[in-house]
Image (cartoon, rainbow, N blue to C red; front, side, top):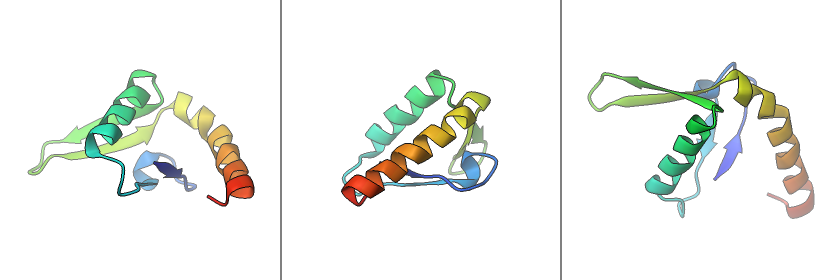
Length: 80
């Protein structure tokens, strides 16, 4: 999974680009870990089907620049 961060205020405006090989359960596990660690906030809307939105917490926002630098390093060295 490769995050694609934009300049929005939260994760709702940012989209996650998911490779086909990533399973839904793997994504769910990763999101739960991020939520447990306080990096993201999960909001469930009472709709059919249920709608789930994620936003970065203050802690998560603090990691944004680090993640972006790691992304840039990966692109520079591995072309990803």
